[in-house]
Length: 119
Image 1 (cartoon, one colour):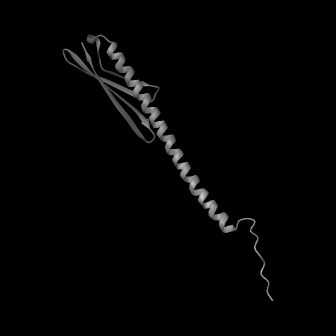
Image 2 (cartoon, helix red, strand yellow; image 1 turned 180 degrees about the horizontal axis):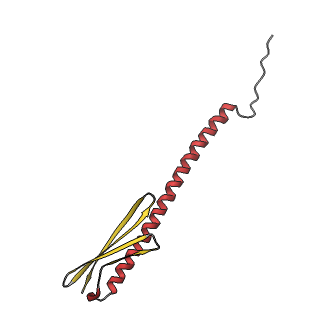
Image 3 (spheres, rainbow, N blue to C red; image 1 turned 90 degrees about the horizontal axis):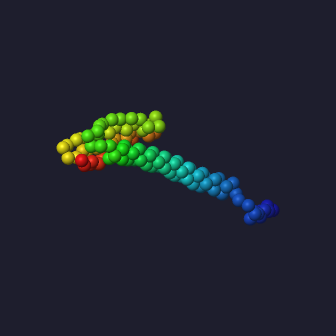
């Protein structure tokens, strides 16, 4: 006569452990991808904010310059941000445009700000 042994209900089978590890791996990969995307987005936002502040510095400096002494120019800040400002001068006003560009990962990025300066 063949006797069957009772299985213990204390613990998990190998199949259950493998399935649980697979599910945990998928969740870990998804969380890692989300974290990397968040870090890249945060860096991009920080650099765009810095570039906007640098552009506003130029615009404020141009607003404080006497109308007859306004001139176009360019410079580099922090060896990363390249600023170019141009002026379209008319008899009663000048339109100042500042373009800021910087490298971002594998591609470049740029923003443009402008204002009107009256005489």
